[in-house]
Length: 136
Image (cartoon, helix red, strand yellow):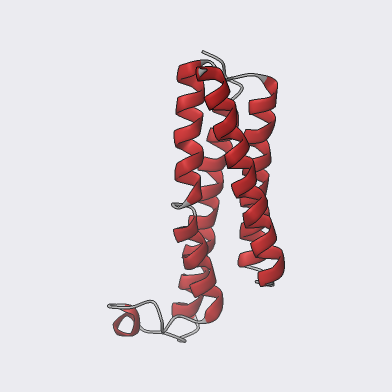
């Protein structure tokens, strides 16, 4: 087994926990400042202030294309597509997720966020191609 792909996977998992902490802290701040009460958010997150909603949206995003990433990592390891190019692509994808989060919970500039997201998807497509080439 090659660890080259395990490290970026662990890094992305850690980042997901970081986003969870950001979401928790922003929600806690909303309660502490009395911007929301438990009853306000018992059914829907819409009453949270925008910073808490952005963090929650980003946390949800961590279960969208990252699932494709983790599937590709497992497939790559199974078929032996664990070269340095695949590792570099995996790290590049992790970097796009970090930048995406920083933009999403920061300025939330949609032009930057969409561009970073598109780059991440392109990286995933390249990883998919690496797996396909290893199978052929």
